[in-house]
Length: 117
Length: 113
Image (cartoon, rainbow over all chains, first blue to last red):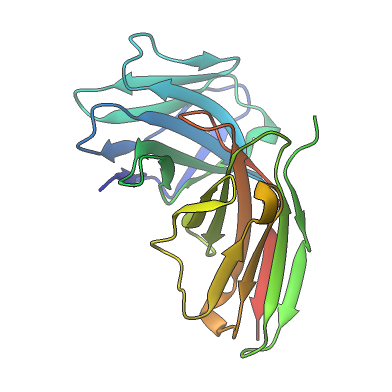
């Protein structure tokens, strides 16, 4: 079974500073994917970044980067130069193949990020 | 490209009533998911469709929840009868398949009183 752990219920950061949101995972699968999603107060889940288990380079997407440490089973999200619009819930998720042969996502409980001026 | 559409956005019902949610995925996406997100938690998968076939419904409370995806496009999720603990946001998502990211709709916020 897959499990995602996000230990930070809430994080505070000042505008323009960098922030790291922690995520650890547990799986016995060799092939899997790691995702981060943002959920603003409007409720929609917005895809941010993806890292494949066999990718050697850490994924980056604009101000978002994923610090992937496979041996430690961690996939932390780094947001550089925080903006007020980054205030939201952030979810770490893992995709792995189920018995059905299809992949599905398992989500963590999320971290609430608040960016102050 | 149009995103995942869901309706209604909000629904308030009394316990023991029935309710239905509708989802239209992104065109061409074969895989469709329904998630339940209880306040303060991450989304939990209820059911996964590949085209019009169910590939995973292990976490769907089948005594009260049902879902279908006719013709492999739109999908409907039904709750009958509703309980207080069904109050949650119901999210629909779709993906081309594999490890591609899932694209989520805006969700339906259900309140059961």
